[in-house]
Length: 169
Image (tube, rainbow, N blue to C red; front, side, top):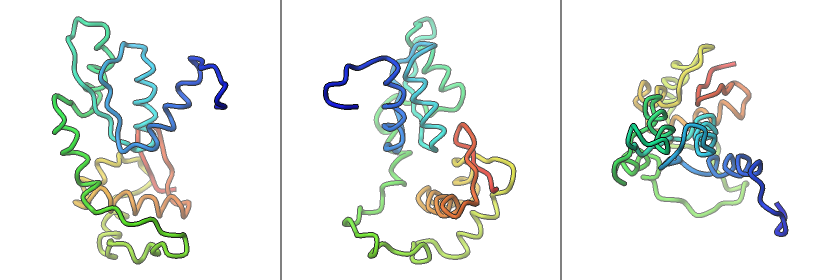
Protein backbone atom coordinates (compact mmCIF):
# COMPACT_ATOMS: atom_id res chain seq x y z
CA UNK A 1 0.00 0.00 0.00
CA UNK A 2 1.15 3.59 -0.49
CA UNK A 3 2.90 5.28 2.44
CA UNK A 4 -0.11 7.47 3.21
CA UNK A 5 -2.48 4.47 3.35
CA UNK A 6 -4.50 4.09 6.54
CA UNK A 7 -4.40 0.46 7.73
CA UNK A 8 -7.70 -1.38 7.59
CA UNK A 9 -8.55 -4.77 9.06
CA UNK A 10 -9.34 -6.20 5.64
CA UNK A 11 -5.80 -5.39 4.43
CA UNK A 12 -4.03 -7.61 6.96
CA UNK A 13 -4.84 -11.01 5.39
CA UNK A 14 -3.35 -9.86 2.08
CA UNK A 15 -0.20 -8.63 3.81
CA UNK A 16 0.09 -11.78 5.91
CA UNK A 17 -0.27 -13.96 2.79
CA UNK A 18 2.83 -12.26 1.41
CA UNK A 19 4.69 -12.65 4.70
CA UNK A 20 3.88 -16.36 4.98
CA UNK A 21 4.95 -16.82 1.37
CA UNK A 22 8.38 -15.34 2.06
CA UNK A 23 8.93 -17.36 5.24
CA UNK A 24 10.05 -20.95 5.68
CA UNK A 25 7.39 -21.28 8.35
CA UNK A 26 5.09 -19.35 10.64
CA UNK A 27 4.82 -19.55 14.42
CA UNK A 28 1.39 -18.92 15.90
CA UNK A 29 1.87 -17.86 19.51
CA UNK A 30 -1.62 -16.83 20.53
CA UNK A 31 -4.81 -17.13 18.52
CA UNK A 32 -8.45 -17.04 19.49
CA UNK A 33 -10.90 -19.28 17.67
CA UNK A 34 -11.55 -16.65 14.97
CA UNK A 35 -8.14 -15.00 14.80
CA UNK A 36 -6.38 -13.41 11.86
CA UNK A 37 -3.37 -15.50 12.86
CA UNK A 38 -5.28 -18.59 11.78
CA UNK A 39 -5.77 -17.03 8.34
CA UNK A 40 -2.00 -16.62 8.14
CA UNK A 41 -1.53 -20.25 9.22
CA UNK A 42 -3.94 -21.37 6.47
CA UNK A 43 -2.00 -19.35 3.87
CA UNK A 44 1.25 -20.91 5.08
CA UNK A 45 -0.19 -24.41 4.68
CA UNK A 46 -1.47 -23.61 1.19
CA UNK A 47 2.00 -22.35 0.29
CA UNK A 48 3.71 -25.47 1.61
CA UNK A 49 5.29 -23.72 4.58
CA UNK A 50 5.76 -25.15 8.05
CA UNK A 51 3.21 -24.17 10.69
CA UNK A 52 4.28 -24.08 14.34
CA UNK A 53 2.01 -23.39 17.30
CA UNK A 54 2.65 -22.60 20.95
CA UNK A 55 0.11 -24.44 23.14
CA UNK A 56 -1.94 -22.62 25.73
CA UNK A 57 -4.29 -23.38 28.56
CA UNK A 58 -7.36 -25.30 27.39
CA UNK A 59 -9.57 -22.90 29.34
CA UNK A 60 -8.05 -19.72 27.86
CA UNK A 61 -10.05 -18.53 24.83
CA UNK A 62 -6.89 -16.81 23.50
CA UNK A 63 -5.30 -20.27 23.10
CA UNK A 64 -8.15 -22.05 21.30
CA UNK A 65 -6.72 -21.39 17.84
CA UNK A 66 -3.21 -22.61 18.68
CA UNK A 67 -4.48 -25.70 20.43
CA UNK A 68 -6.71 -26.51 17.45
CA UNK A 69 -3.77 -26.05 15.05
CA UNK A 70 -1.74 -28.53 17.11
CA UNK A 71 -4.64 -31.02 16.96
CA UNK A 72 -4.66 -30.61 13.18
CA UNK A 73 -0.93 -31.34 12.87
CA UNK A 74 0.92 -28.06 13.46
CA UNK A 75 4.31 -28.56 15.06
CA UNK A 76 4.13 -28.04 18.81
CA UNK A 77 6.58 -25.42 20.06
CA UNK A 78 7.73 -25.22 23.66
CA UNK A 79 11.17 -23.71 22.96
CA UNK A 80 13.21 -22.42 20.04
CA UNK A 81 14.91 -25.78 19.41
CA UNK A 82 11.54 -27.16 18.26
CA UNK A 83 11.62 -24.70 15.35
CA UNK A 84 15.34 -24.95 14.64
CA UNK A 85 15.24 -28.76 14.41
CA UNK A 86 12.58 -28.60 11.69
CA UNK A 87 14.07 -25.73 9.70
CA UNK A 88 17.76 -26.68 10.00
CA UNK A 89 17.70 -29.17 7.08
CA UNK A 90 16.30 -26.42 4.85
CA UNK A 91 19.12 -24.00 5.63
CA UNK A 92 22.11 -26.29 6.16
CA UNK A 93 23.59 -25.42 2.80
CA UNK A 94 25.49 -22.13 2.77
CA UNK A 95 23.69 -19.36 0.95
CA UNK A 96 25.35 -18.75 -2.38
CA UNK A 97 26.11 -15.27 -3.64
CA UNK A 98 23.36 -13.79 -5.76
CA UNK A 99 23.67 -14.71 -9.42
CA UNK A 100 22.25 -13.17 -12.52
CA UNK A 101 19.69 -15.36 -14.33
CA UNK A 102 22.26 -16.23 -17.00
CA UNK A 103 24.58 -17.61 -14.29
CA UNK A 104 21.90 -19.63 -12.50
CA UNK A 105 22.49 -23.37 -12.71
CA UNK A 106 20.18 -25.35 -14.92
CA UNK A 107 17.88 -27.78 -13.08
CA UNK A 108 20.04 -30.69 -14.26
CA UNK A 109 23.01 -29.07 -12.49
CA UNK A 110 21.30 -29.13 -9.12
CA UNK A 111 22.56 -31.42 -6.37
CA UNK A 112 19.82 -33.91 -7.20
CA UNK A 113 20.79 -37.01 -9.09
CA UNK A 114 18.45 -38.68 -11.56
CA UNK A 115 17.72 -41.52 -9.16
CA UNK A 116 16.62 -39.14 -6.40
CA UNK A 117 14.39 -37.21 -8.83
CA UNK A 118 12.85 -40.45 -10.06
CA UNK A 119 12.19 -41.59 -6.48
CA UNK A 120 10.42 -38.31 -5.65
CA UNK A 121 8.45 -38.37 -8.91
CA UNK A 122 7.37 -41.98 -8.31
CA UNK A 123 5.64 -40.88 -5.09
CA UNK A 124 3.50 -38.35 -6.95
CA UNK A 125 0.31 -39.18 -8.76
CA UNK A 126 -3.20 -37.86 -9.31
CA UNK A 127 -4.02 -38.31 -5.61
CA UNK A 128 -2.90 -35.26 -3.58
CA UNK A 129 -0.07 -35.86 -1.12
CA UNK A 130 1.34 -33.64 1.62
CA UNK A 131 4.77 -32.13 1.01
CA UNK A 132 5.86 -33.43 4.44
CA UNK A 133 4.82 -36.97 3.47
CA UNK A 134 6.70 -36.64 0.19
CA UNK A 135 9.84 -35.62 2.08
CA UNK A 136 9.48 -38.44 4.59
CA UNK A 137 8.65 -41.18 2.05
CA UNK A 138 11.34 -40.16 -0.44
CA UNK A 139 13.99 -40.00 2.30
CA UNK A 140 15.32 -36.91 0.52
CA UNK A 141 16.15 -33.56 2.03
CA UNK A 142 13.35 -30.97 2.15
CA UNK A 143 15.42 -28.83 -0.24
CA UNK A 144 15.67 -31.67 -2.78
CA UNK A 145 11.95 -32.38 -2.67
CA UNK A 146 11.00 -28.71 -2.88
CA UNK A 147 13.38 -28.24 -5.82
CA UNK A 148 11.87 -31.19 -7.68
CA UNK A 149 8.32 -30.01 -6.95
CA UNK A 150 9.19 -26.48 -8.08
CA UNK A 151 10.65 -27.80 -11.35
CA UNK A 152 7.49 -29.86 -11.93
CA UNK A 153 5.31 -26.87 -11.08
CA UNK A 154 7.21 -24.63 -13.50
CA UNK A 155 6.73 -27.30 -16.15
CA UNK A 156 2.97 -27.27 -15.46
CA UNK A 157 2.91 -30.85 -14.18
CA UNK A 158 1.91 -30.13 -10.55
CA UNK A 159 -1.44 -29.02 -9.21
CA UNK A 160 -1.54 -27.42 -5.74
CA UNK A 161 -4.50 -28.16 -3.51
CA UNK A 162 -5.33 -26.53 -0.18
CA UNK A 163 -3.47 -27.40 3.03
CA UNK A 164 -0.14 -27.99 1.30
CA UNK A 165 -1.33 -30.92 -0.82
CA UNK A 166 0.15 -31.44 -4.29
CA UNK A 167 -0.64 -33.85 -7.13
CA UNK A 168 0.47 -34.54 -10.68
CA UNK A 169 -1.77 -33.02 -13.35
